[in-house]
Length: 574
Image: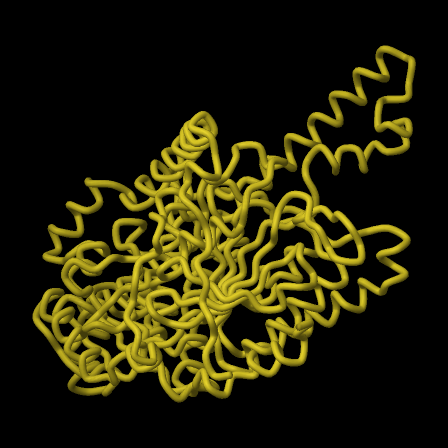
């Protein structure tokens, strides 16, 4: 009763696809990965070498040099929000705002996963742009949900004033960062700040609630700098005189420790993280060890067809994500357009919920198209989601969904009600959920399967993700429906009118297809990060370890008393 039988899943690539298909799929994915990596590299450079040299002239490290010094040697950095503001232009600046001028990363420090939030000091001296506050708040929320320590590397010249109206006010404006500081403190999540340079106005508030604040000799924290204080010029006062370490460490008490330089501050912050409890992940492995999948994650590049209308076997994807390619399917006899089950990633238990593709055989109903939600599948994943939440098992959602079943029968069966039940389950879950948009993420199905509006801790997209209410061609048909016949062909016989309708439909389809692009989604913060499919296993290892790192912050049952066991007995058809 207390043991789950994990069975092998997946097969060698050559048993699933022909050599021609493998080559075609790899070629298409390589082109998309190349375009993505080029954009990530541009963002990583900030404003470039000239601005990095200016930072060095002040005897400071660049933001990425600070992160490198902070992290454990040889460990990997997982950046979120990299492409925020990609392609956007802002009046008042000749240059773009790569990454919204802030870097947010999961970093391993002293063997503990840590959220690092660092002003990009080569981009307008770390100023806050439109979407900078939202990006910082999103990273704070991830840390809050996972109870991960937060490190702020503050080097901020304040709001980018020409665009202040788009980053100052509103529910998620800059002030909400400080509320998140307070909420993290309220939940006992450790916060450590290093102040390395400018720390003006809002930037000055951000470190204050932190448990420990380090200031370098060249740093200052001020509500208003010397330029705004009457008499500062005549008194020959600088911002350093007004709010430097002499003031805040030795007089005001707003900072704790004065250090000579960046390297010393970063070393001290590492030491502070080392004082925290170690990760609980090894305990929650229950005697097992982390293991690789039996099939390399790189093979995911070959599994996905370039044409989104073509199917693939989701079992083959799971086999390249989970330890030893072992999986225990739950509720296997019903709702077969969905797959639900348990596996280990990095030795740690996770629940997996995923869409099947192609034509699916459902006992009692016949063939159904995969990638859609039917009544039985909705009830299945809702029940499994609740069971995982009750047992404290993190959930990984693998989305490739076109939406809900529609039509007379679907309405008669009450799919609206079943969908609401699923939305309630996901809205009230407290166990960490991670959502991966593998390919299609369409309509209400995107919501129902824990899309970003339903608060997964992290939502990842891939280069082949298409996030929208509906595809461009479908939306164009809906827009021009009154001008089309029953076969969705243009009904008019007037050549000029036919041309105008065709052009209008093409413009609608092209605009929607551009909006669906994962880079555009990431720029708008409609997804947290775009990740090559071959990197999904590495990301899940980090996320799952992060979910199990903290102890005492949420319900975590041991596997002997999981409600999943009872669910299987009650629903067994044997």
